[in-house]
Length: 214
Image (cartoon, rainbow, N blue to C red; front, side, top):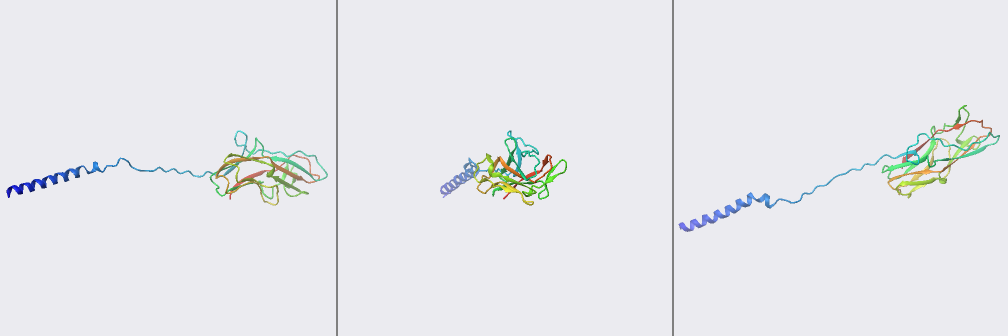
């Protein structure tokens, strides 16, 4: 009986020692050799914008686009010109700010009430009719040059005469256009009806271009 009892105690002791060994080494046995994580990067859209730039991509402030000189006439006459050339590019940038498209328009700085005005304060209209003065803008005569993105979905608008205070559209980008796009238009045709007997002088008409998200 004593011998049997000793064998049982010895057996229990071995099991206890094995359990203690496993407990003290469980962290080693279950240690991982990899750990997962992820990085996060937010890219925010920029600001939809328009300006006028030269061939070196430098902004040109308040440029002047000259119409063809005319001589005083007792009859109504027209003068032509060009809005946008290689040194005065009509530029638009859409850095992901207008995903449904955008429009570029041109208007008098004082819509509706603005006039061609000389230094001597003589005036004539840009938005009336052939008799009192009207300016027609023809973007379809121009050329769109994409700088970033393609020309897909970016269109020149048709010739339109100013009327009332309404602007004239130069370019329209649809939702199919690249979401990140930059480019310019040049060679937009201008035709101004000048009233009969308009006094001599150098006349100016301040203008403003505006890009708007659709």
